[in-house]
Image (cartoon, rainbow, N blue to C red; front, side):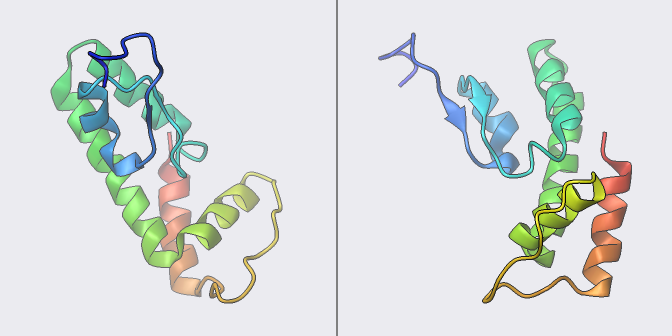
Length: 116
């Protein structure tokens, strides 16, 4: 696509695939967790652009671990919880989405506390 349409913008949509998609020429990303972990995504892109693939890979693994934790908890509830921790109260998810368990909140607290 990039060869056929070099002036178009291409977006990544799966946070877990950000680094591989950068190698394919994506312009940007619109993933779910980017807003919660923007500094990590910026560092990942910078490492990629500087050719530091080891650092980029390490950061992609960090992103993946955070995404896995959020998916395990319930991605939509996890996003709302992350926003609440930043002072943005979006309420809770309606049925059929389950509320977060205390264990899920502890796991989410860990990834949100370490976020950079």
